[in-house]
Image (cartoon, rainbow, N blue to C red; front, top):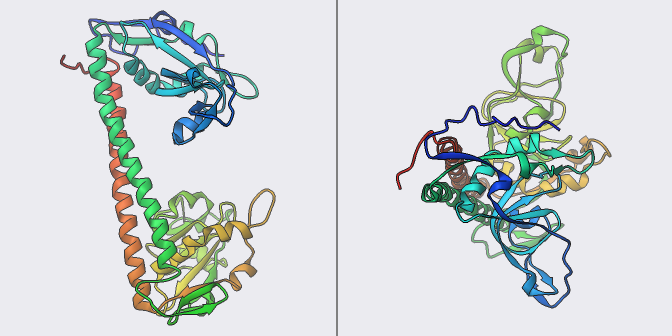
Length: 404
């Protein structure tokens, strides 16, 4: 294991009235957790793993409520994410955590923020183990922390960072609530529509009387993708975006216009690849199946995608949401032990619910407005996260001092 040098803060700006300490020197108390006994009886929180801390909703029943304690700083000691830190949680300390409290001259929230800032360093230099990784016992004795001597300055720094943390958490909660709302809307709008009072019985249950349930191929032209010869240089590095499995992260965000790889007209002309018009709905059928997008310009795809060019009777944004709603069905029908795949036969038999075009567009507009709200909130959250990173770099190094 690589040890940090004694001068590992040489790159930090050590302002007057700031000092470096070994972590061990500022700890008043530390405790390694254990697997607690629990029975159905007394309600209490058990910090059994990182899932509890990141979801915060888990409640177990503990045998002795008095075993619970307030934990100033928790360090995840074992597991793939060993080295992550948490603060201000109350519960029974599970075996995967070490809890520490600090001497009175040190603010626990400041130290928590400092450890968060150096998570990559901790996970790179202070984890060991060939199987399940764990934090080295040397961590306490050698890891150094840069701290203002004045505890009020420590508290002011941690207060500023906590305000940004709160904004990130609140925005994240709003995103999750909006996604939950979207799921409910999709369930209602894509099966029952808006304002209907008359329904008919079909193979998929009751649907509005003026809706159709039929093969998607009756409403859209289905196209497969293809990969031009990779050995022919003139087929690549062109101007035509080519969607491949490398672009899966760009999907499920409505529109896709940029790709990792670009092909050429020559590549399209000399292969089975198809130049798809703007507005084509693409869906992955290999690897991570059911990832969906709408082409924002003329594009092509690899053979790992099925593509639908909608007719005038099918709104492409409605189709995008309908296929997104069916994602779990795609996952169920995928086969393969290593790489999951949906065969072409599945898509030939794929049926969809199709309202009248005007209602399709109304449904698409409602769901699009919700997605736009989510996108705004995600952008806001990313801004706060960028702000936090910058503040950490300035405030936790002494480059920018706070007034106290």
